[in-house]
Structures are given as structure tokens and as C-alpha cells.
Length: 147
Image (cartoon, rainbow, N blue to C red; front, side, top):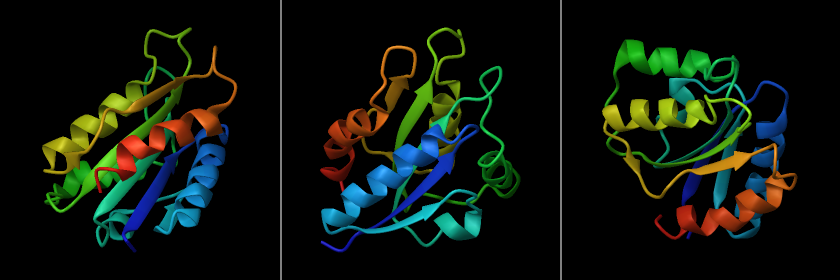
């Protein structure tokens, strides 16, 4: 079971990166081979079969700055990602009507390029949920059991 999972983060204030670090640890303990990128490029994700995107939503529903270049690259190059299976963990605030919009952006763009979403995305509401690591860890089997 040495599947390789690529984790990429979209983080403005570091919240998504903390969750990603925790999930990387959990997956490694479970025997997965994990690579984590905080400033991912297309070259980083292309060799992988499994992608886990952990992102917050920035401003008026946009992708955070450190993940935006990757999605601009995807939009420009339109690569075939049909080899890719993915899951998404989003952090957002329900105080905004753009709650976890970045998750929708990620899903839509990856699916348009042929990637397969293996499970429902997790949307963590930071207003009511203060244990993001545990919430993400509890959701994780939804993703890993599909691999």
C-alpha cells in the first residue's frame, strides 16, 4: 500500500498549512507516501495519482495567493488530469456568503480537466469549529478508502 498522495495547500494565514501538516503526518503513519507542497506547480502534481487539496477561501471567495498560480497554470495549459483522483478540505467562515468558495473553484477546475473527485469535500467552518486537525482527520477515511 505505498500509494503516493500529493497534498497541496492554499493558505492565507497558515490555517490550511497547519491542517496539511497534520494530515501529512497521519497519512505517513498509515503507510502512505506523502509529498506536501505549499506553493505547488503543475510539475509538482502531475506525477501523482492522488491529490489532496487543503485550502482556505480568501477575500470574496478567491483562492489564496499561494495556490492561485497553480490554478492559473491549469487554466492556461488545460492538461489532461484524467489519471488524477482528488479530494478537497476547505476552511472558511460561515460569516461570509462566499463560505468555502475556493473548494468549489478547485472541484470545478479539476473535474473540467478530467480529474476524478473520490468523495464529498470537507468544508470546515472556522466560526464554529476550533479543532480543524481532528475534523480533517475524521474525514480522511472518506478519501483514503477510495484510493
